[in-house]
Length: 143
Image (cartoon, rainbow, N blue to C red; front, side):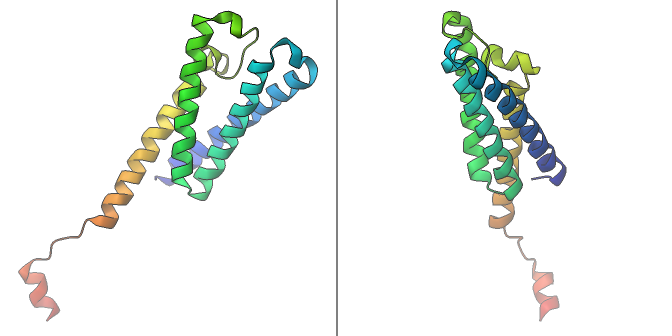
């Protein structure tokens, strides 16, 4: 993976994780009974963002890939359910409204991360498995 893209993903996931953690901790400690599912999902998303950031930072791309897939599924499921059955969400989570309270970053980020992770993984796999064909001229020079 491109080092700049890698650092950008780590920073974005770390910042989003801190924002989600801060919000969910305040909500859980002050008004958990108002929306326990919503606040718990926000805390879960914060943990997931931290895991993804650390996984990308440490080069654990399989874990990062699984984490971003879970994240995207969560955003799509919670976002959809928020519109279908709004009574289930008496307060917002990071993922309600497809992350609209966070500028839709929770929706866009996993798509971008999955694209970068899959592209980077594909290139790494190609580089490791493709052998450059040798020409007769290069064989003659080696002898």
